[in-house]
Image 1 (tube, rainbow over the protein chains, first blue to last red):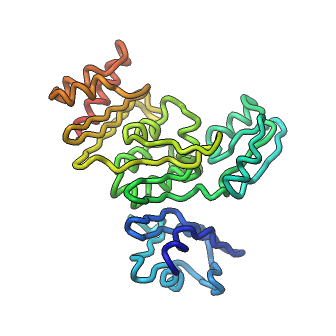
Image 2: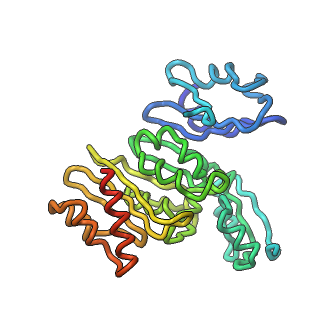
Image 3: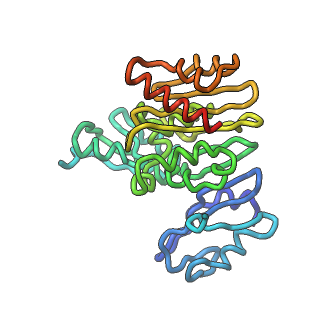
Length: 75
Length: 226
């Protein structure tokens, strides 16, 4: 995924959960997504179960974009 | 009480919101002030335009400028990494707004547009030279420029819940911005730039009697953090 797509990513929702883009730092090219009380979510045709979703991290945060940090897990 | 009848419109974009804003419409963001007013029938709009799904809920930093969407929740501002790193004054003030439940629903834009003179966030935003970005009658975002080079910031308030007096300060070499409950304290700014000590400068804040004492105290405490 390119940064231009990530920074405009709309809510990712399925029957069980929701992930929304909370902040996007264009200067550092990092984004923070908030995961709302979910058991699973389907993104890009794939279903993710549990929390945290490592496959989603990989999908949204390829190395050149830095880290993916679930907002609720920030110190 | 329950609100008087109104039509509810859920706007999926800024354009939809603007189209839905008829003369008797009001905008619903976090609803922390509006809903109690509706319930008490202090306000009786014909239409409620909900902008929570209009794509205005993201905090962004672009070319050094912080852009806070109108429906960004106060809690999001409080936990934002961008804000903590680059605009610590905002993070500090955000955590003092209301309590967790209201910060979770309450929006930064709603606080600004509600314009309660005791609200903490507008004081901090004014100290940071934030600009309101409007599209017609709709606030879409707040743009906060980067802090001046070498800037230090401070914030202090007096009172529980809604503070009776608060002060937000930004100081850098050759730069002073002091905002208290009620507006900018330009005399304090000028005194600081002329070399006055924080204690001397704080005494120049406005107000009389007890109010002056409170404003001077919070100004002094905010300056002491810089």
